[in-house]
Amino acid sequence: MLSLTVVLRVATAHAGGVVVPAAHGEPDVADEADAFALIVRGALESTDDALHPDAARLDEAAAVATAAHADWVVFAEVARDGVGLRAALVVVRASGEPAGAVEVTAGDGDLHELAARAVAEVAALTHATTRSVRPASLGELRPFVRAQRAAARGDDATAAAELATAEPGVAPRVPGVHTRLAAVWNDPALPLEARVRAALAAATPRELAELAAVGSGPVERAARAFAALSTSDVATAERELAGAAAHPLISRARVLLAQIRNDRKARDAALRELLARSPADAQIAIAGLPRGSVPDAIVRRVLELAPADRPRVAALAGFAAAAAHQDGARALALVAVAELDDDAVAALPGVIADSGAADGPDATRLAAEVAMRTAPASAGP
Image 1 (tube, helix red, strand yellow):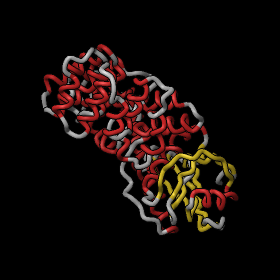
Image 2 (image 1 turned 120 degrees about the vertical axis):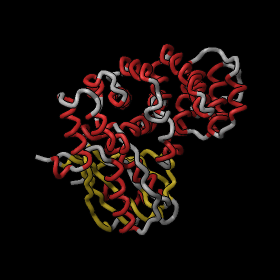
Image 3 (image 1 turned 180 degrees about the horizontal axis):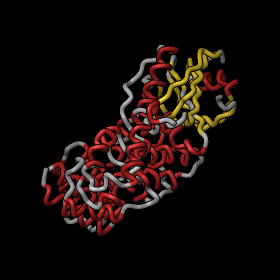
Image 4 (image 1 turned 60 degrees about the vertical axis):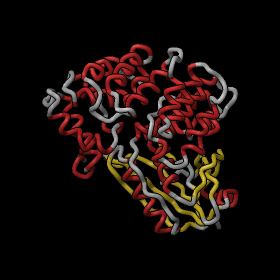
């Protein structure tokens, strides 16, 4: 049953659009619920994702729709469903009259499939135009949903810190992330470095360049270099990085520049420097590189430094190390299937088989997690 009271992060919609409040979820699926709503909202093409924190009950849907200039409001609740996930949705007309209620299910952590099925059901009821639902894992989306929560309560410092852990390339797969979080990196009360790190997660190249338009410090120069590299302006990036003072963001930009120039020697040297200076920045930089392209020595060091409090980073480090036959037992212990993207999940059985630890307890655990993700009906008790 849907909770009668939910906290709404209402998206202002165009006429005929759909408002998708934040989905309700118990604490054990709170991140999954917010990530689900983020994906569904982004897939509804008619929705403008301006952030308007509010509170409402299901019986206040008409007022919500009126405020958002929308024709439909979709309430959702995400919960565990045996070994998988279930989303229950109620679609309400702008008049407040219910139009339908549906349930969709998917494997544990398979937010892509859960959201795709939900979007199809909403489109069938509302005739809304939709975008394709692009794959994104819980681990990839967690920084954005936690930043969104922090921003909604007015805590831009925490929101910026969450965004600073986001991987490159995730935000473009989830339309609406940029608009909903732009206020964070535009908050003048935050230090410039915090704003730049947040902007690297989801800002446009122009916004990033404008944020650091004045100044010659390493943070400003790194920001302008990243902005240039986002538009393949290698020459500008090289000028910004030449002679810049040492800083983790400068090293990160050099990693990206070398990758674009296909200069693996320079890239790996910048990665080693970054690992020594800031492991967290190195882990973000590596997440943006082609899988399997990092030398084994760096993979091994990343495994040694994997943080226990960042499950996505730990899972990536473990997956890469297991794939490179580096300390298979420790590597598999760090992997959690819910943190992995679809491609990694598909490759995981082969990685486990070749890890040297295929008979260990974590190999058994991961095989079960893969089944719960991809075939929950057969994985249940």
